[in-house]
Image 1 (cartoon, rainbow, N blue to C red):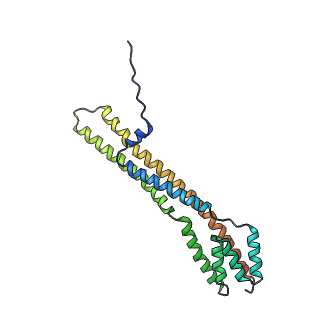
Image 2 (cartoon, rainbow, N blue to C red; image 1 turned 135 degrees about the vertical axis):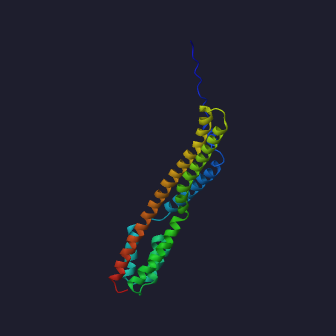
Image 3 (cartoon, rainbow, N blue to C red; image 1 turned 90 degrees about the vertical axis):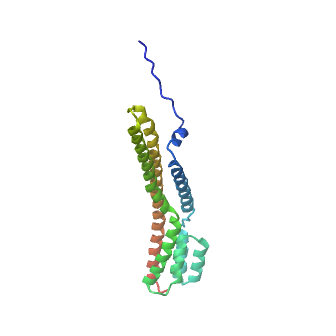
Length: 214
């Protein structure tokens, strides 16, 4: 006796994705937004200047010599986050140290806002995308069981035929969420490294003016 085994037809990846239903549209939009935000912040952070030690040696010499205007011009010519914070400190020379430090910290917060931009939405997408996927799956399962209640008999094809399609939204939602989560924390790490750099320079600046008679 000869048994003929029918092999399942392989479905193209794009066609399989489209079987996820209408919730694939917002998931697709979320993926585009996540990619845009990531590359926007990535190239912005990558473009931030890293000043060499020679710059700070020259800046310290000018400050020690009392040439505050020249020091501010040097910072203005570099035009980066670190120098904008240092310029805020130079503009407030003569005030008490806590006031100078407070002004520099306020400027630093502004720079952090510039760094982060729309990064917040990456975190939102990381949480929303999986939930949208689960909603699609749950709604699909509800429809499947509703169809079972209407059918005279229960067949495997009736259950599995629609279930695998509804699980697609969960898979896509989780994938988008994981990528957005990793992207958010990677960018956040880059921001923290930049912040640590100019925080260190700010502390050295405060130590310098604290030990001089400027």
